[in-house]
Image 1 (cartoon, rainbow, N blue to C red):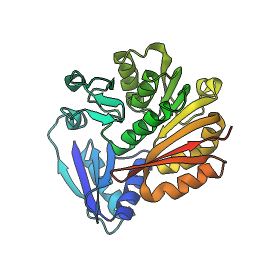
Image 2: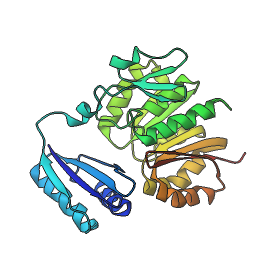
Image 3: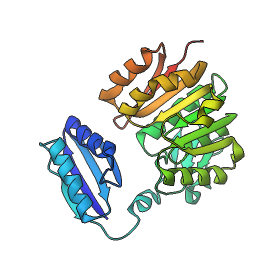
Length: 286
């Protein structure tokens, strides 16, 4: 396994991240970007082979010529899982997300969600997942969560959280088969039963997804570009008066995502900022 890193201005890092994340196929096994300091951002990518690592370096430097990517070989260990092991529980309003080693320490009155360390995205530690959980916590206090669609379900954490606060059904979709397997296992461990269905599909164009519409609550924790592209489908699948919770976008990407949804008569109801990431909550008119 190889780790490729680069530090630079937010715009350059974002462009390089988009290039790696959207390449088909991409040489990177995983890509992450986060704020390093007030003036710089950091990109980390992981590649299985030296050839793939070299391709990552080339894509980063070709996309953002001002960046200088550094590559290092890692020991042959499961770095994705190890990076999550031992992480402290994450509190998001009434929710506590943790592995089995820490969930036993759950505080009274909190809603525990068991998510073990693993390759699927969504342990609650990332600013996007945290933002969605905070939005859900606020939502549940004002109306029933109802039927849920969770696009880009990852570990299934958002669907599981929704079911634990009264959702009647949660359908999670993901284009990554490993994530679907992890989400299904997490559903079993959290005893949400058949109310959670994890589907290996891209976007919202699944017969089951279409057949269960409309949804009172829709999550889409992905990236800014697909959020814009999915705006017509999400708007159509959301029930009148329903709530749409979007994340996976950086602060400077809010405008394009907001325009895509307000242009479809969705009303922006809440914005949550955490660690450089934005979560936008929209309400569909009745």
